[in-house]
Image (tube, one colour):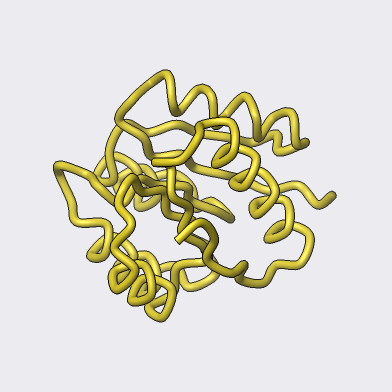
Length: 136
């Protein structure tokens, strides 16, 4: 598998570390964790840009949709995979149409959505093409 840089944006440290652990098991070696979308954006502006961003749609500081628009505009090669506890199909469809690489529902069994996330990330790394929305 090709090597990739992944940024995880998740306010819950346990969830972020669980995602990180599973991605490391999937041979993704370069992973950064950020507790908020603004911190991730700041790091991208000042330090480095990842290949992939895995972020929760629900961020208290920044709307996930606005974040996606900014990433698509400033860093079009970066793939954004959203996680959500919501099942608003209209929002998910809009995010996919606006440039999200994938949207995964983390309201289902944790082991299932983690496996789906790892599988989709591996696919995106291997194929470098958008995955399809799953679990909605």
